[in-house]
Structure formats: C-alpha cells, structure tokens
Image 1 (tube, helix red, strand yellow):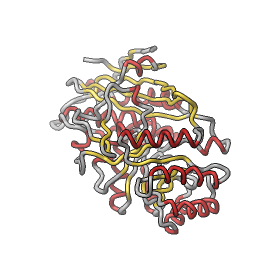
Image 2 (tube, one colour):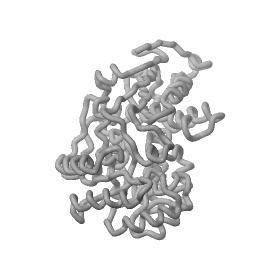
Image 3 (tube, rainbow, N blue to C red):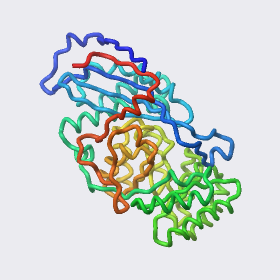
Length: 396
C-alpha cells in the first residue's frame, strides 16, 4: 500500500483555545482504497437490460480516525461497478478538514464536509465520500463510551430479523438458487430475497414460485426488480406476484419515480420497498413524504453516514413506515436495532473477508455483538487488498 503521511495544520488551529465543552481533538486520519473481489460475476436485472456490466468487485473506502486522547474509530463507504476511485479522491480532499475538530461534534463535522464539496452537489459522490468519516466518528464515540453503537443510540431490541439476498441473483440457475435458499434457511436465516426483472416476467414468476414452493407458505420471501420495470409492466407483474404472499416487492420502478412507487404501493396488498439508491436525507424525505414505500431502505454509506441515516429513521418512524436497510449489515445491524418498529436486516456474506470478527445469526435473527462501537476491525486480507492510502496529521 502506498501510504503518504502528511502533516496538516489548518489555519488558526494552533491558536484555537478549547472551550469548556471541548474535550478532545482529531489528531490523525487515514483513508484507504480497497478492492474486494467476488468469487464469480454477479448479474441482476440491470445487467440483463444492458444498463450495467456484471459485478466482479466492490471498491471500499475505509477511514480510520484517532484523537489526541487516543480514541479510535473506523468506518467505510463503498461503490459497486464504478466510482470507487472518484470517492477516494474526494475523501482525500476532505480528510484534512477533520484535523483539530472535536470528534464529539459529529453533526458539525458532517455539515463542514458536506459544504466542502457542495459545488458538486449535496448528494451522490459528495455525500458517499463523507460516509466513511461520519461512520468512523460514531464508532469512536461508542467505543469511548464502552458501548455497542446500538446501545449508544438506544436499542429497541438486541437482535434483528435477517434475510439473505446473495444467493438469489439472476446469473444463477434456478437449481443453484434453490440450493442456496435451502442452505441459507439451514444456517438460521429468517427470510429470502431473490432477483426478478427479466424480459419475460413469466420466467420471473416461475423462479419465484419454485422458491415459494420450497420454503412453504409462511416463510418470509421478497423479490427485487432493481428498477427495471416501467409503470405498466410493474403493475401487471406485481399483481401476479401477489398470489405468492411476498413480504415485499423491491424497486419495481426507477428509484426516483416517487409518485409511481406511491401509486403502486396504494394499489397493492403486498408491500413496496425502495430507497437503496438514494444518496441524501433530502431524497429520502421526498420518498417518505410522497408515501412511495411501505419499507424504506436507506443505506448509511450511500446517504453520507450514520448522521443522515438517523434523520431518515426519525422521519420514517414519524410517518409510520417500516425499515429495511440496504447492504452493509456490519453497520446497519446497530441502526436497525435502534428503530422503534420491527425492521429487517439484509444479509450478505461477501464482506466477511474484510473483517476479523463475525456477526451471529441464530433463529432467523442477527444478534447485536457486545463489542464496543460497530465491533469490527480490518483483517490482514483487507490490508492485502488495499490499493492506495494516505494519512493526515500525526498519530499518538
């Protein structure tokens, strides 16, 4: 890894006098770009329509932060297929701005970083590049308190019902999907989601019905069309799927078609889920206020971190909506545990090689670990997969 240590002294920092409430300062920040290879190329409906290429690797941006008092936190963001290098470049622009700040002032720091890149907008890549820092600061805060992040936030439960997605991609044969479903259920998973959105919806229905027949009538089953239907096709497909008693139908329409999702949700008995592609609190507020989803699916690394995620949680709870965060279960387990209504957590084993620790899946639920903070640390494999990194400030 090509680390470059840089000492950065923001103008005026040396002369700043801490106030009575200022208890610590950020002294060191490290940003790393890591590529996680997948065992086999993965395809969903976006690939079948020619809009994206198969997924072969995931880019991760890790942020490590240390304060003058020696408290440390780690966070990450990610990008699939494209954008990882751009996120890393912007994260490096932002990192020096954290030096000298009190790590307790997470909301203030989030706004500072957001405005630093505001000329490019306040969503998309700019917010996603902030996420590793924001998440690391929440991890640091919970570790300093000696609490799992869920407990720092105020948990409503110590475990969250958990469903698997990674075994149901369209690039897999139906036989493989059924084998994966059986294996997941045997491992203690609480629900199954498979991908749909093929050109022939009859083939989608055949695959989903085969999974339903395997699972039986009562086991939670979800489908995900990955935004590949128009309004008419979505209406017809969703009505057909209603006979299979699904827990939800995910992303039947373009992620930004809030009105279309709202009309569909109002017309169906089956719940509609969406939100994973939105990249700010403001975009989620539009979705929530138009009643575009029964299950809101924010992604903390995509919306800018835990700070905006908590705003989304509050608004969704206020409007009586359900929560099912997208991906990154290592982060979202803690956030889902703090949601008032019973949520769902998405299970992906893909990220396990990056971390030394494992989450416990038992009885259909993922259990909040007792480890302080988010409860994970980077593995030797993650370090070996790191392509670039830079450090700012000085470690203790």
